[in-house]
Length: 163
Length: 114
Image (cartoon, rainbow over all chains, first blue to last red; front, side, top):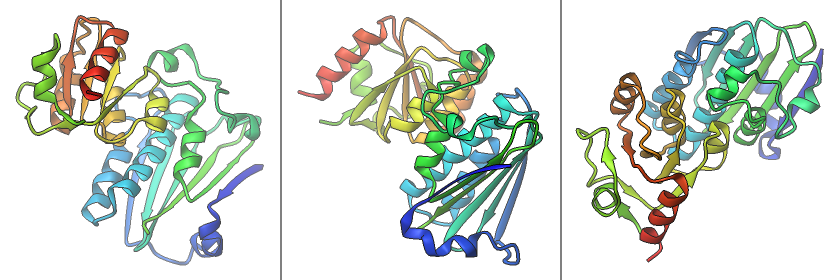
């Protein structure tokens, strides 16, 4: 498995904590994402947005969460055999895990390059596939971790702090 | 300067596709032109009008995630009723105009920059 990780230096000291598995989130939202289902793709992000809005999260932060989550949902819809989006909401951050069922990313550094895309014509007709999804996710995340390999499943961790 | 959507409708050849939403209270300060949805999510700002020819349902989701309050379709493009319904649900105003993207951008720009 290859790994790509990006960390906002402000939150460098929180990495170990956010990847611990023994802390329980206050709220967990789980959504199934289906291959090529562009009609329902985005529902998980919309629900997450509404939930953190209710918690009083700043609108600018809310926007970062919504954009990163929606791009990731679209990626699973457009490029994978489907997967699951799990949003773990903690008092001062959200940790969203996107786990798909393959077929995996062959070259992570290429995938992270703005403008690079393997999208099909169908995806492009939908207005996506410009090669900007992962760069958008990276820009809106405080911590982003992408684990994948060819013929494997892909796991994406997106962590965004509320303050 | 900022402009209410209502003023825009009065000054430019525009049809409102969501007449039950209040156009006098929604104010735009700027605009963004693109048909690439990730480009819009990456670069458009809140309180901008989005000029596009992309009429798919995902357009509404992108506007909602990005905080765009109003979308204007160029070249008389009208999305399917299900897309209009979704926009009403989300409180996003949908407009359409016979003008091209270029003409719309120019006219809206000059109204905003006076």
